[in-house]
Length: 262
Image (cartoon, rainbow, N blue to C red; front, top):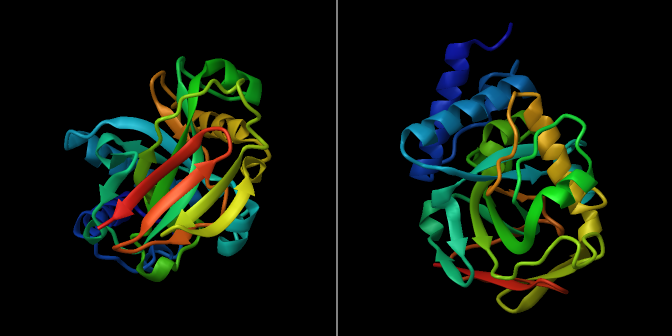
């Protein structure tokens, strides 16, 4: 039996409350086993409307599950997207209150800021490069509003791609100024190396992630706007973080970006 509109709205409300209260809820796939990926995107869209009605502004999008290692963790073989709001961005070397999150993880990513809009379908990496103002280093702090990260694809999608915070690095480079695929990053926690990897882990090239996002948004009659940025997906596996941790990602060309959890 299909999930009703009222049920989807109730699930969106529950996720919003879980985020704002930092209190997790059972998986949506257990509460409504019939929920589809399309239903999940409808839940996420409901959350976006709620945030906009409360005065928050969309500043970008995030693409998740672009890394085969992360896809294997969750048993999913396709990317997903979420929405980034202005109140969730954090400056480089800034601080994040752990009490506002449930069970966060840190991910090093390349972010693309657009100088012109991108609207699919059929967009390519070349279209992305032409539309990009600059690329900057970033840390995405993901946080799942579902108990214990017990999530399936529908849970991730509905939970706004488990988006929580974005730490914005200060370096700005044209996408043509360096090799996007071979850019290496080393992720550190409290000064100790956690993992290193190349950006080719993100769909072979992070620009392909941006193209995927714009093409996927087109299925819902939407696109990427000039001035927005796109988080392209983690290059390494996700790293657990907690109060007292300092996280730093050191990129070969783009330099470092860091944040402390209090």
